[in-house]
Length: 639
Image (cartoon, helix red, strand yellow):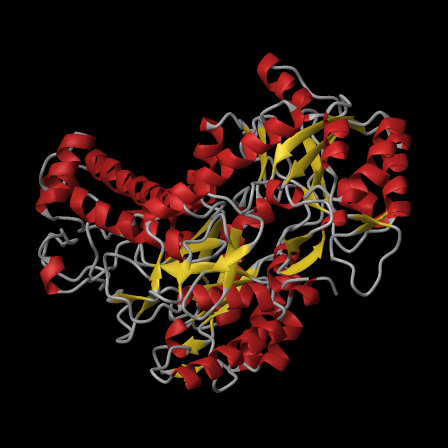
């Protein structure tokens, strides 16, 4: 089994959310086998267990429905039956005809079967390139079996692409990544494929499989099941244009009444769960859990490729030892510790590339450790150099001060917004990641932005005077101004997520917030940040819970107060993450591991599930991972 398939199995998190009257869940099956062996795939399910699953669903009054039932309910505005289940089977294995099809007929259960045309088009006595190795064609359905299944009235045939269920070279380091969402790297030309070539490749494949399925079954598929669950906005749009209005993913979560049918979520059944575990997957609702290490990629980069590989290996082992669920990984270079991006760690057309490193490190962390990786990115703090900077608009202060200290491009400038959007588009195009963390530069002080382009924006869009002095002297106008800035920064962050999702979907969005905003809500005026606003719009609010940075005399007391002040918000328990400091920047000394560990223990005692820390120093083993993991790891949360 390939590393790619193993990774994507591991990354498909099981949905454990509670049932709602109009909700439905989708089960994802693959090959069905008599028994598991050492060579079995991680997603193989035994025949005995499959029979047990079907019997349990029937005995417990679960309603197995079809995709057509889902569409009918949505179009007619009717509620689905309570405890509705959709069955899907991927890849077109022979076992579907041998074991699954008879069970479906016996139970009268409908199902969806996703077919890879290139595998089934191979002559019967030949071999199929499957998971990077040649396997007998007999592992898959015959054409006659496919036709019989499609004519049964119980099974709808879906497209699983014609030949995109494999990996392609994704970077110069040789990482193999999903063909559907990867701009292929050519080792001979040392170039990524062009936009036009990528679009033509994906569209041609989707068309080819539709034509092939129509030829074999008489029906053009209206369902696309994305290989490995990976997809993007471009592929979604293409599929819809080709008549596939329904798209099935491996995204985590339940399918709610208003869930779009172009992004149906599934429970990926792995490790052949016994009936108790299978039932628990459908019934229980354990809390979400996020444990984070925030990593400087500058620590991994080295001009010497041999040393860089050693650094990467050290990081991978450290993250593996930590037991965290997520890494916030720097995607920009910050050599001078200014917080301003002067170069990036991924291919792009807008900024210098220090090294095409982010995609490789992200992929290695996902494949070798199984953690989610968020691209840590500025929202505004980009400095592409004097020549390009002259063509952009920067944030200025009304009194000429440096404001928060970051050089930032103005979010109220069309040309600056377009420049930043291009960067995020290329991030999605050339890197592989699960989310984005917006840097703490996403803020505007009570004296910013006073640039001419911003003043014009305020007057034109918000009906404010084109003068900061005139705005701030009027309390009503001043409140309107800073609240509008808060919403503008939030919306701009969401827009950048959308730009990246053109090529990589789904993407979660986290954003760093200053602690002062949480402790003193009126400070929204000084930062253009609001915790309730963040909880409403982002997947995660990463609150900088850093007592020494805030001059706290008693860090423990300060943290307790921070929890008291923030857990009052309804969404805080599920979406607020406390990010501790592992270094005292005022003294330039590390925080003792025991103290950092104590802060985490405090969170656990108070029932806080989501926290992490920054920075991490892999070279000095600070914090001491052997000590810290007892409080930090996801496993520790279960103890």
